[in-house]
Length: 401
Image (cartoon, rainbow, N blue to C red; front, top):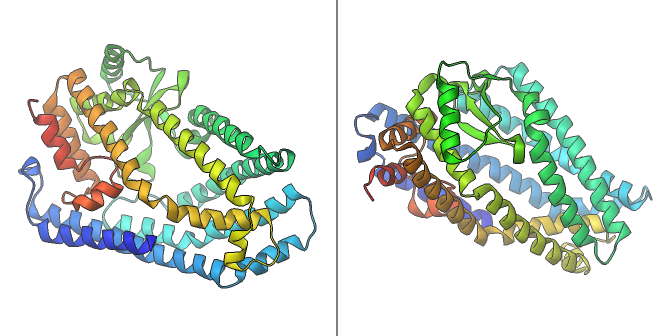
């Protein structure tokens, strides 16, 4: 049912784009011609079709594994080794994670070297892709090993209150990874160098000082080594905050537009959107972990799916499947909150920079460079868009309200 609804939204979005896509929004007139508009529509359609088929594949594999008896066989096989609780959990979960990773490889390769290539975005060689994949696999192995080992140890050590300790550990661990990411994780994949453009770094620091934000460093990232998409972001938390500019962004935007983009990111920090999102997510996860604890105390999931040897690990897998369906109604709420934050950041940036035209111009360039859909279906956007549709954002920025 969940997948059927999502496929319906994707279909509606494509139909709406095809029906309305011949008209260039007023905000883009003179900036987007019919040729570019057709390219945008083609890119969106191809991504959607590919997402549909990859999702179908994943769902078929999941259904066969859960309902075809494979989970029952796998569960009994792992239990037959008669290892301790923590080691058995690692033996149970790790192969499933690796299987999911390797099954997704062909789709990642096709997306990168076919779709992204076709539309001029991909800049990666197969060697770079393979190197990134191996690094990601190594990192995920380390992180997964820590999370699973400590998490299962807490479950075993405190049978009645593990849900509190697991939630607390995951929270602290998340903050720790966010803190070390600028120093340890990000440099593994990209090279960060000084911006190197005369006067730009000083203007950025002046803008951030005007916003009341202290930024340690401003870096240029070699994004063009992998992709020609453009972006900029703040990295890290606390005193580890850094501004990261894609080299592709620096190539395509003037200083006023770059300052407008960063004024928007400053708005997120000043409005404490990151902190609010973390608090909101932790509240939801706290409730979710408690509900999971209560469900895992029972065996009804094992009965429903016909699992012969009841194990905590099989219950967790089944609960994850059910949970993925249960969270669907909360998707539009999460998207709405994110869009509201984006609007607040736009208003802050408009006041901080005082340059509406540069903000609008930056958004137009970002949309053109990334081939963003200019005609999303309203319902699809309400469900999945973390940002307001770009034409709507530009209209709001240029308004005198």
